Image (tube, rainbow, N blue to C red; front, side, top):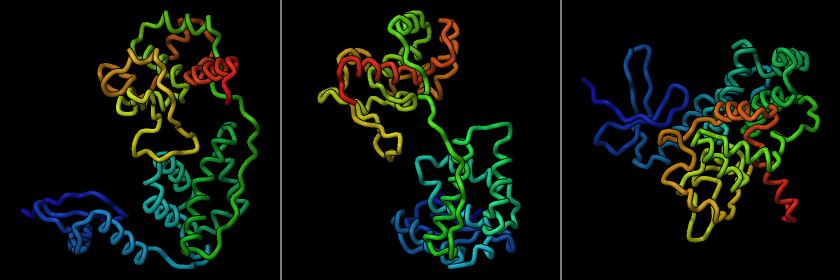
Length: 308
């Protein structure tokens, strides 16, 4: 039997792998003609260098150079964008899903030129609307395809980057209305879910967005300096910036090993179901959601004269 290989980074039908006990990375692929796995040594034991070599080779072999948009398939542009860039971004899962919507709507033989004609984009938008979906939702999907096409132009893959319109988006209300102190007391003190109580405490203490509270790990808390780094090490900052905030003295007794919000010893995947149950128990309206903690603290800080 052939030796198994350690597999990691992949681009299209090719991936990096090395045999057990060997240091050198190989470019590996499955040969359909011979029905066997083939490999070529990349001559390096450094993983980052091997990734770059595979990427350079892949671009040279599979990325067309300076083609007219009527000569290159949309599916190729979207695939290369995701494989070379999209999958390495913080929002990689959203990018993957959005690009898949493009691929599901436009036929495989559709060129960039055909897909980006104003009439076709309008048809795509009508498809995305599907029962009066918000413009912001549609724009997020349009932006993913636009980003792929613009990158293809910047990389010299296509000669021009056609315009893709966006729909107007009006001002939206903040997610989650602030709660009064009476509502907050009732919500917390009648709560029977330990992990929801943890979420409420850390949400109020940090005024962070719900996902940042769910992600909060003990390693992000510097007790000696009295600081909380809401952005975990290694996570790239996004438009929803996660700052470093002060550690309130009231939260010190609640610091625990691992994630600060846990259910049966594990980090929680989502808080919405527990929140909805407690909201119903309290008789609150639907505008009281996990973001309400952040907006409640913002209102309290403004009332206390804290500068924004």
